[in-house]
Each structure stands twice: as C-alpha cells, then as structure tokens.
Length: 310
Ligand code: BYC
Image (cartoon, rainbow, N blue to C red; front, side, top):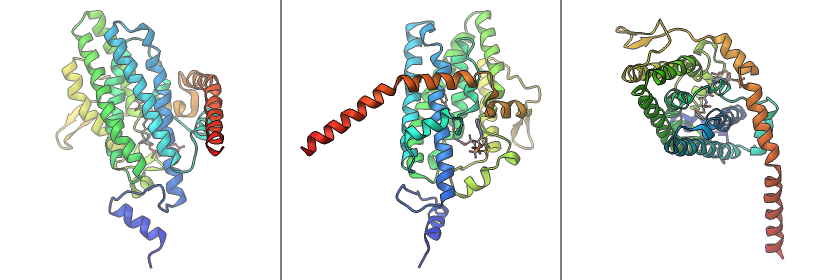
C-alpha cells in the first residue's frame, strides 16, 4: 500500500496537479500560502503606483486604458486570494498579516511613479517581468494557483502591450517626451530585475519549491530570460538600458549584465524602500474604510440564511 507522502511525490513527479482535497505536506501548504498571498498582495498594492496617475491621464483614451488595467490588477488579487483560501486561510486573515508586516508584497511597488512615462515603463518592464515569472507558474503543481495564473497571464500580456505602445508613442514625440521615457527606464530597470528575487545562491526557498513543482525555474534563469527579451525591445524603442556591463555573450548565447544592488533590494524587502510606509498606510486606510461593506455583506448573508431556514 502506498503512503500519502508517496502518492503526493508521484503526483508531483508526473507533473500532475495537487488539488485542495489531496493530502499535502505541511511545508508545501505553508510555502504555497506564503507565495500565493505575497502574489495577491502585490497585485492589490500594485494598484497604487499606477492609480496615482488616473486623475491626471493625458487623454480620455489613456485614462480608459489605465482604468481597465488597474481594475484588472484588483481582479488578479481576488483570483489569487481565492486560490489561497483553498489552503485553509481566509482573505481577511491574509490581509491582516499583510497589514501587520507578517507577509510581504513585491519590492517593485515601493518605488514612486514620478511621471506619466512611468505608466508605460511599468507596463513594459514590470508587467514584462511579471509575465516572464508567471508563464511558467501556469504549470505549477498546485491546481488552483496554476489555473488562476492562466487567466492572469492573458491579461498581463495586454498590460505589457499598452505600456510598450505608450512608450512608442512618446518616443515618436518631442525631445522632452523622449527624455521622460529614458529617465523613467533609468529608474525602473534595476528594480525590475530585482522582482525575480535574490540570486539563486541566496534564495532559501528555490530548491525546495522546485522539488515540489511550485516553481518551475530559478530566480536567475528567469532574470536572464527577461534581460534577453528586453534588450531588443529597448533597441526597437530607442532607449538605453542603464547597465554599462550589458552585452551579448556569443559563447553563452545570452546577454551578460551587471549585478543589481542587493543591499537596496534587502532594504526595500525589509520595509525601508522609498514608499513602503505610504503603501501600507494607504492599504490600511482602504481596509478600514471598507469595514462597513464587509459588515453589511455579513449581516445580509445572515438574514438571508435565517429567512430561508424560516
Ligand atoms: N519582493 O527564496 P526566495 C505584478 C522574498 S505582481 C519582495 O527566492 P521564493 C503586478 C521571498 O518572499 C508581481 N520579496 O523566495 C501587479 C522570500 O521571503 P521569505 C508579484 C521578495 O518565493 C500589479 C525571500 O525574499 N509576482 O506583477 O522562492 C501591477 C527569499 O526569496 C522578492 C509574484 O509574486 C521581491 N521581489 O521566490 C503590475 C510571483 N523576491 O518569505 C504588475 C510569484 C523574493 O522567505 N512569486 N522575495 O522571508 C514568485 O515567483 C516567487 O515568490 C519569487 C521569490 C520569485 C518572487
């Protein structure tokens, strides 16, 4: 007779899916809760830097695009919180852990958005990095997470295109607009590379997460893929990526590139980035402002249940 552990191992080895009612090791469940919650929080906090420009969009068309994108991020957060709830933890508990600093969100959203070009750069580089990281997650071993990722990736590719299209339009504009794009790319390039997490040698979770089929690639592999993908896009756009070490390596068949500032990354992850305090304060305010909606929904559900019992 096979043990539960053996059944789990066989499912993972065959790249089949683990589903919510299947037995799973406690470490697997905890790792998933950590990663999916962090991902969900990132989508929700990620609405803030771009939401900052909604009232100052340069045209009705740009405003409609940005509104749709920011709303999509809210949807992504909700799919991911739902996937996480299948692991036995409620959305309210997850939100409280975020607000208490017990769970993280992506470092990238702790940087400010200083010009409208940042909307384009976030679409191109931040959503581009997100796609690179998330396409392999469509094949993650946990069913609800993988299925959420399929839909999210489709929407992310629209997000990336709108960003690239905005930057292309600005690059065809005035010298001042081109300078805005370059300045924005200069600020976002390195933080975008940090989105993939620490170097493999300093990543405590990668080996185990790959064994469990939660992650399908290492942080460094995906970072390399992103650099290789971005270089020709930057050339087509006419911007310079701010890395003097960036060059094609014929032997490796990849671009060599410089080292991100990992001290800065650690500072941001620990809560000391330029906007950490602002992002969490804003999230806490939104949560408090929504208390009456949660109470009303709960009261309505209780009354409906009572009425149907009667
Ligand atoms: N930021 O062992 P490691 C979006 C933490 S949303 C902050 O390599 P792992 C979008 C990590 O949690 C983008 N923390 O970890 C939304 C771990 O901490 P603890 C969000 C980071 O999990 C709106 C420690 O560092 N995407 O695209 O194996 C608008 C050691 O790291 C970061 C996802 O969440 C970071 N960048 O690998 C636009 C994707 N990196 O808890 C766009 C799903 C690492 O052990 N997540 N840490 O203390 C993943 O793929 C993986 O969790 C990561 C990290 C690759 C991010």
